[in-house]
Length: 304
Image: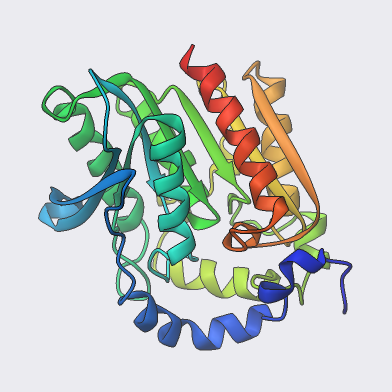
């Protein structure tokens, strides 16, 4: 089916979900050559940080070139279906946050499918969060002002790490920013049933992802995989959510926002008309420009 997606997203809307599913090994190979480099405005440093079960991760820390005192921190968990590395767009957005918001951005290179199934990616990112807390003073990070964010699978991780911190009696982030997140393994929403052929990601992709991600897992062990199934979410910090109109994940984001609101959590939600999954990769579009402005305002208000 053809969807009335904004012409500004033409460069990404030509790719079907099935095409992305077939080509992801090649895309991942290409992404391996993309480097996030320092420039005139930000410094990029690579650290070896502890991952889950004794593993070592490569973690980027991006910071503005000139600053004084402790800075807020954004924990940035990139998307890609738990299958793909960070893209050039992820790095561009991370550097934009560091420059425009005068904050440090921490990006862990968490381990991926198909080799590393649930809960490895989430535990890797939880370990990175704890590393930041433990080293906040030496890194000049204000640990009272940490925000978690992620797109798609990264949104899943941001939500799951927040839940994990709560369950393990660790300090919660000041806010959570979820961009078209994948949140519900039940795949039971209207948008999930309807959008079987949308660009970039569709319900067929989603099923393949969940089957791969949770292979061999008993349902009692998947608390952190599918946060939409958690009843008590009143502990959540203020949350910002964007949902793409023509995306099988659309309703998951909107329903999660409503669930948080019903439990008294401050929520800002943007239902992005005329968009498909992955729209923020169209980094130069007015759509992304508008979203970045909204995110910046929301984060600045949180920092007060």
